[in-house]
Image (cartoon, rainbow, N blue to C red; front, side):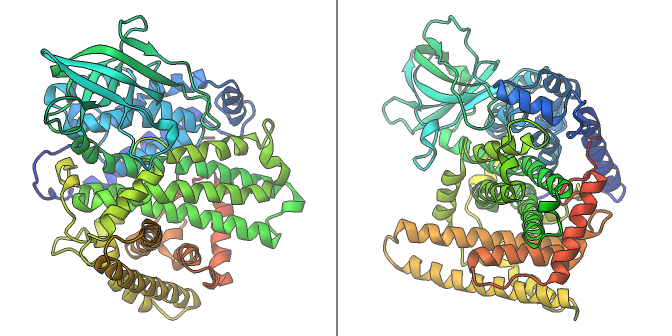
Length: 586
């Protein structure tokens, strides 16, 4: 991933022969990782579900799985290509990590997301020396941990922080942070500390070597227990007048600006990776329904629950796809789009998993046996909404931006178009983190909704086409209503926070619906043809609209039945339930 520091526009698209070869390379990496893990449902597989459940019960990561990821050099996925790694596109990063989250969210957080949270800030604002040193560390298998400043809207479990007082040629670090993943195993720490100096401008970021356990002025706090992702090593750090040299400051700007440059890359990718965990909950529910006649897929309630869950996964993937690609294509809009993803996806995926628990009944509580992985995933998914720039902090970020968007209209010439929605298209420009903090010129996704609605209306005359046109029209009406309400708030002084948050919820759902329509419009789809036809889009839009208006009609059976058939076919063929229909390890 080339990380450009200038404000240059998008680079040239890849040549005609580049797309197949680039996509083939990505598929080969994912396939190699899936083959290494093998069949999750095979009780004899040393990397199967039973082994991960057992490791989770022991509050540890599965050693054989860590060895597999070391052999795969997973951390090369989070190092930019120009620094010797494999990171070129954020959507590909999320796609590869789904294979890990499909087995164990704790493993994905410890070995992928955790180091990436720290490294993303280095790529966004570090010096050339800091970027090269970080890349060398990660490529050699070294771990990183980070302590971002937690906004007031964040989770109290993650509060506390550090201060840095000037002391000669450097700083003295004080304070504590209660919960950091990987803190006990990290070789490098990214810490944000409030600078205590005359005329200070808030936080600064420091990239330091992890202190030895007996270092003066440092204390590793006891491990914290968590309800989900129990294999993660979560510790606190405490510093007391710990010396940090000035050259350890990351970049030259303020910590707030650096975090703002990193957050779009973080917020969009983390929840997208977690789709692998949600995939496992749906797969387990289908397996149970197939095996038990009392919860057979022939039962209307079970069929509806499975259809809705599959629709939600496709909906979430469409939104995640748009957000990760927007970081490359629409950097000024990426802060808002990525915040929508960080807010909406953890909520959607957690709700979907709880809905699926009704299919399994008492087995959804099982801590051992064939379906125990479901309870594990059910506990793990809510943890995805925590961390730097967590769900509530992201919701607040959208609220802060919403009233300042220019009428939710499209920007001037140069909108991303089809490239925003095509998941196999490699021709993306380099990331430009400096543009993440610049004001958005428009809203390409929502602002261009009217044109897509008109295309949906003209799509054809079949029942599914008419249903799609009806739902698209309803989404357009919701957008117009949102615009009016935003305008009213904009003219009133100091709108109530609860009312603004209500607008955020509606805006986020409209963004998700617009993402689905964009993928429907431009996507070629996997071999089973699901995302090219209107059935999945009808079902996904129905889910969005019922959240906006509980009285919205349910989709026709002609949309629901093809989706259930596709779900069962993917289950039988061992393929993922996202937009990629990835072959899974067997």
